[in-house]
Length: 548
Image 1: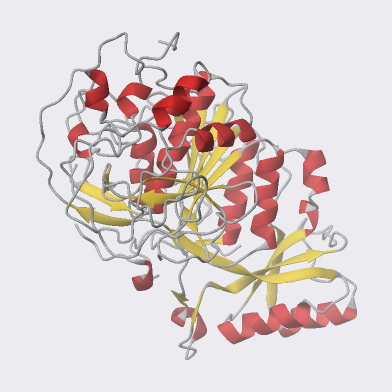
Image 2 (image 1 turned 90 degrees about the vertical axis):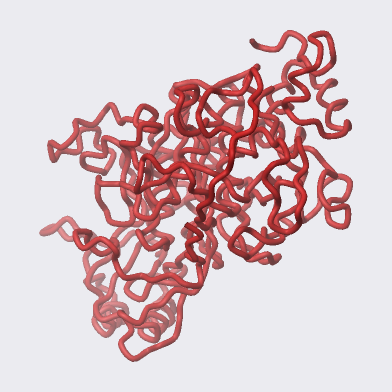
């Protein structure tokens, strides 16, 4: 069975302007002003004439409120499509709806939620919250240093310090960089390089799927005939030959601002092809689920639907490099669906440097990922500011500052990097995909256990990185080599975890009979900070994001 790894783009939630919707209402809000969620205690009626949810429920008080607030449509958030019918029923997904109104504003949507939520048939009513991606873009030039024998021949591999840190790229909070403060990738590739049977679903801003480094790695929906206007595989999405755009409700899921293309290149850029960068997983397919607008905001309905889509189309792991500040029972239902199907969801801790709960990272069962710098300390400040969040739900940390990757506008530009817990999440998702390639019988909990038990503890600031789990580093900074070595030699893993850090090149130069060889191992600073989001469409030929 084909395996999918979701890459939940980890987005930090912010207050978003709604002036264009609210008229003179100048407040900021982190939810849609034209739609909200309801859950009923029984399914709503379907019109025999239209096949749509009827606005005439037969409940006089509710119908009166629908009329008062100019409700124009009610739709199921989750269609059953090609999903699990028993689980769909168990999670009561057939009674969760999105309600869309005409003439929305902050006050009006709040009043509608409050008033409609009092009806006896309504179990809950809540806003359609909004979150963002958890990474910010920058540009820089890095000079190449001497390369080692086992280093891939990708031209700009020397910029990928998180794979092989030689100490040349300094941290943002100090002038030092620690050689070996990386995920130990050169040694990990000696054990596993990935499999085409594994699919990593990237829930993000889209992917530039024609990039030479990515075009052969994009997941193809083989049950769908492209561009024939028919939902051939009956999964609810017409012509989703290469995934789906949930923000604009379209098959055209190209990248709108670059975040998703960077995430895709970190996970799975073509490796050893003489150009660009090296992806952590050299063979996995990348599923493109666009659930962020071209201005970096994502409604929870897009996120919820994209999660179910990825699961229903074969995912084993979900990587979301995105997040929002608000708890949502609807988004939690989507996460519960993934967890129940054995799909690992990974999400970013977010980038405000605080200890607040962000979602989906704070949901039970999600592996939440924080960010470290080139000195192995928690990112107290990224290249653009901010800082890696912390809290009681953090699982692990991974490199997240100045993570170079592909550019969504210029295929010849290799000077672009992004910084944030988004990038950290992508790294851990790729490690999870390698673990599945190594042993496809591993469960969601197996993946979490291996990643957390092989993370390096106490490599960061001792004031925060305490022995065992702590709320700043979780179980520690991930190590791909130790994770892949765990199956063949767990005792050696325990020994290596407690040894001082060594760069991958140091390990490569060890004699073959030393313990570092596994036994029987299988051979442009753009200030696009979330506080400065402009929701005006950049592309004149794009429709407004889907308000469903």
